[in-house]
Image (spheres, rainbow, N blue to C red):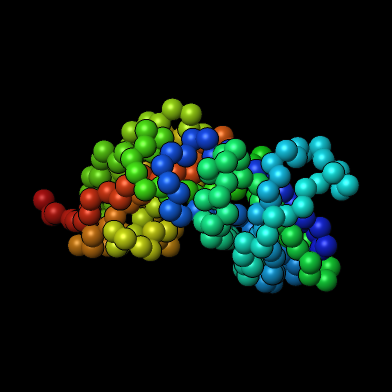
Amino acid sequence: MIVKSGSVAYLKFDLSSVTGTVTEAKLNLYLSNTPNGGYANFLISGVGDDTWTESMTYSTRPAFGGQEAIQIAAASGWVTTDVTNFIKSQSTGDKMASLLISYSNYGGTLSFNSREHSSNKPVLEVTTNGPSNKTPYINKALAGNEQVLIGWTKVSGTSYYRVYRSTSPTSGFVLLKDNIKSLQYWDHESNHPGMPLTNGTTYYYKVGRVDSSGVETLSAVSPGTKPSYTAN
């Protein structure tokens, strides 16, 4: 997904799989390139008109519905923007949410991974206030020497899963793995170098379920799990 200086790009998410009241929503975009490998300022805006299609033209494109956030992005990696207020307003209507990315720096091009990429696709992470059959349930957290095996229940209509880890049950969750097709994941440094587990430290996990529209709903936090080593 390319956004040139002075141009825009549109995203659309189907919220029909989201149940309960939305309490938080974050747009996660993977920025793969910025002008001169530096920082770039771009605008995320809500779009009230969801009738647009990918075949729209400049003259038929919808106007944005209001500013959501200005995000300063690094040269590469995940960029997260809080879009809670806008997604709340869209979740009670036609359950479609359109967002616009605009970039107006002098020259250059921003490159984001699109839904056509094999991994690191755009994800709208939605948290609600109640249980849902559209969220996975973590049913396994087995600890070993500097590793933890996480398992979860299958949710129908899922395109892929994402696993998060933190040392706190309430905050600081970091994405470990994107685009998981199975129902378990080994958390070990060999799978994500630079993010080792420490024996004796308690870790907590969340599993995100992403549907075909790119909407992610998260599991409840797993019980604390502590890796350890026992000598024979």
